[in-house]
Each structure stands twice: as structure tokens, then as C-alpha cells.
Length: 210
Image (tube, rainbow, N blue to C red; front, top):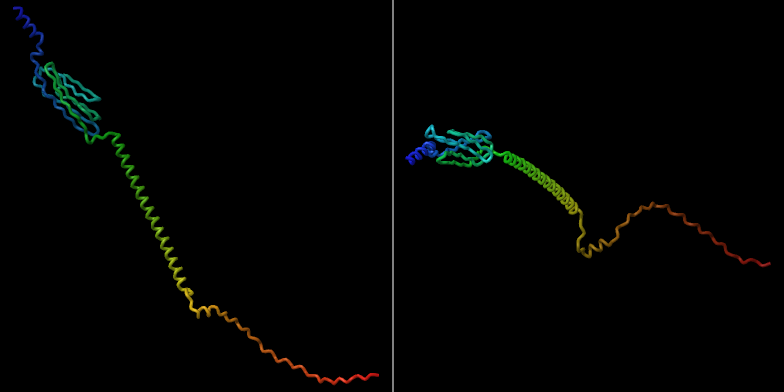
């Protein structure tokens, strides 16, 4: 009799454990909206009298609700999310790493923008350097053409001047050594000078002595 009383007492003391069933497997899903991530944790409740705890957590946020079939969490950070369902009989968990491709971090956006600006500046400098070198090359070509033209003109002038032979012949040497003829000064014809008169010489007589 005492044994039956103790058994009935245990049944009356733990009515919850005798009627609890294992919890179902939770379903974890996510959806990206604008700049936020919407994470959902769902379970299918078998009986209305079953009592369990639904927990949805992430590294930076956590949400717990009792006897709920759905939990929803909104966050701006990607990461690992956990959906936990438990009661006194069992515990089940679903875990998933959720990242939205359209959700970009601020640092990533700034780095992409900075890289694009740097690329544009680099292209502008490259085009400027190419044009500058091309202009300098054209100037050098013009100067070279002018120098060639001047050299051709000087060569033409030198060709027009008569050049002395390298090995002159003896005849050419005599011609070169011959003095140049001096210009003759035309002398005016002068009238003939009068001839001097011849005087008759008187004979010299000897002087008489006294």
C-alpha cells in the first residue's frame, strides 16, 4: 500500500514530464531588405499544452520568447545566427551563417570609392604624360628637320663655290705664280720740249801783255 501511495505521489508531482514530447526541429531563414537583415526562427507546435522556449540569437543581439512559434530579428550586421528550441525533455538548434550580397559595409564602400578615384587620377596623369612626351617628340623632330635643311643649304653653297684642285699640275702652278697684271695708267701725251739753241763759241784770243 505504501509503495502504491509513493508511486501515485510521484505521478501527481511530475505531471509535466509525463506529457512532454521532444521539440520539433526549428527552421531558420533570412531575408535582405535594403540595409537590414530580417532573420526568422519558426517551429511547428504539435500540442497546445506543450511548453517550450524559442531563442534566436546572434553575436550582437538576442531574442527569447516562451511558447511562440515564430521569432523575427532585424539587424544590420551579418554573422552566425542560432535558433534554439527546448523544453524539459529535449533541445534542438539550427545554426546558419547569413550574409547579404547587397549589404555592403561602410568601410568596403569607402575603399571601393577610393580605389575608383585613385584609378581615375592615375589614368588622367598617364594620358597627360603621354601627350607631353608626344609634343616634345614633335618639337625635337621639327628642330632636327630645320637643322637638316640648314645643313643642306650650306652644302649647296659650298658646292657652288669653285674648289682648288688637290694636286695641281705644273702649268697650273705657273699660272698661279704669275703675278697679276697691274692696271696701266694712261699717260697724256706731252708736247715736245724745245731743243736748246747751240751758241757759237768765240775763239779765245790770247791776252796781250803790256
